[in-house]
Length: 111
Image (cartoon, rainbow, N blue to C red):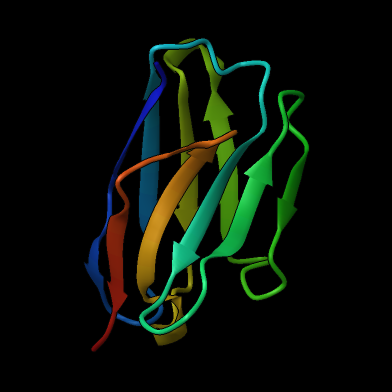
């Protein structure tokens, strides 16, 4: 039974940075695609970034050049480094592995 636990969210000013972490337990995730999604109030959940088992990455156009997804297979952990944050990045961020979702972590960008 796979479990995903996100951490690292919080309140940050525009232009600031945060790093989200997602620790997977219950399974070896090294062979799978891992992804970060986000959901803002009143909006649908959207894909932010994904990383394949081989380390290839893909990003939503809205975060390209600002966010970086990475993974540490030895630690069963995936990260999302978020720089130059904007108010429109405010959302609950979710980690995803196949059909499993984490509980989400709130990111609020506000002055």
